[in-house]
Image (cartoon, rainbow, N blue to C red):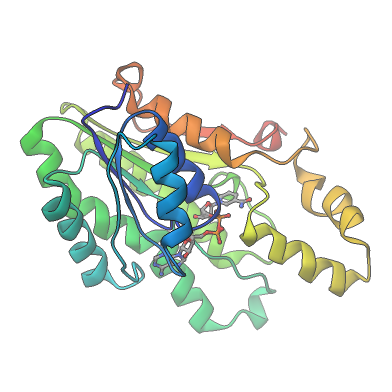
Length: 259
Ligand code: NAD
């Protein structure tokens, strides 16, 4: 359903972003990748997901720097000739009580988890308007809707992402461009694996107990959300069926925010 579309996914060398890139390629889109680390495995995986029928390329950028985020969008447009589907996924986490929270971690989390979305959207909208089609998707979090202790920067940034998403949706409501946020609960990715290992050490607990009693305590399904299900949601929003879904926070959280 996405043949002829060009998608760009931030932070797609790992985890949820990689799964989204795979799903978009499988649906026929050409995909621009980004993120830290060696891009070769992601390029190979997304190329295979597209069955060789779609183009995949990698454009390095540290999106926590505003001018670099702006330049990244322009580089993707120059390379592929267009940008139709922008997925703002790159993100980091840091867990600490507010009075011990390092100010540089606050700045870093706000820069990549929130401000990068502003810079990439700002750069991508003129082209989407000119071509009269666009999809803007934020990978927010259940923490964009509710809070947990010790995650002040992350929760503030994700609430900010949801506010930005609603504002952009309203500004573009009369255009064929939609803007939505997907709000996952816990997904087992390198980001969460790090938290499990830290908690196991801090609480002197085996990892399976940490998963059950700490990590999934807030997720009523007691099952991790799969990265593939987030990819499928991004594809759905990008199809014609998503044309009138805008300004919405789509929870994929095993019941977390129903409490
Ligand atoms: P991950 O650590 O596996 O992947 C993060 C990606 O972002 C990597 O590709 C990394 O290289 C990239 N990245 C980090 N900083 C960057 C920067 N400055 N510039 C460019 N790329 C950068 O994490 P993940 O779990 O896949 O998380 C992806 C997104 O999903 C994040 O926004 C996260 O907040 C959100 N999320 C994750 C979960 C979860 O449980 N894993 C739940 C809800 C929301």
